[in-house]
Amino acid sequence: MVRLRRLLAVLGLAVSFAAGQPTPGAPVYTAASIANSAANVAGYYSPNSFLTIYGQNLAYVVRAIQPGDIHAGQLPIALTGAEIGVIINLIPANLYYASPGQVNVLIPPSLSPGPAVVQLQNQGLYGPAIKIVLDAAAPVLFQSDATTVIATHGNGPVVTADAPAQAGEVVVLYATGLGATSPATLPNQIPTAAARIIDAVDFQVVLNGVAVDPRLIQYAGVTPGYAGLYQINLQLPADCPPNPEIQIGYSGGLSLTGRFLPVK
Image (cartoon, rainbow, N blue to C red; front, side):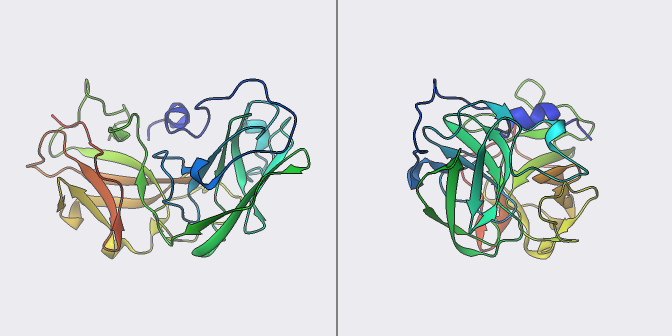
């Protein structure tokens, strides 16, 4: 298994940008400034997926989650030195990153699909209550840039244009929002073992608009040791085309178009 600590920064779960010096006042953000963290687009929200809030006065410090914030495998709802919190349908979300201009959280896996309200407070000052919609699953692949998905070779190195995958090779794709798993994800806890998605029969990987043989999907489920992060272990078809557009998801909805996997 590749060491994902470096990937977490690439995945946008640690640091993307921070605004300048904060101005004391209530947090400022809107529905348009809330996004799915993996693809940085509005929408694609589901329980146990990552959400980013952009705005002003979101925090008065810059803090990323550290080992000291995690106790006995329990994820924090507050970060050391950052007196902020995010609630979604009145349930505290796990904080991954806080800065004046950006906050990253994990949507609680205990929430049910349907309407939800997101609200951030910074040192007792509350921002607006913003309505979003949670789907049962909202598959999104993590990206290294606007069009390239993040994947690793089966032995660990990251797949890039300079180190592309090969047809027939097993690659690992990283995603969020794949939905419920068995065993179920526990709130506030880091998963310690593999857990496959429940709806595996309907799950698809689509290359250039064509679904791959389901037998090539060796695993789709949580990534042990990383809450909210899913992985798909995929053996690329023997006739895999170069640099295919790739989507994942279910018959009811696939991930974004215009995303590509480097394949030679």
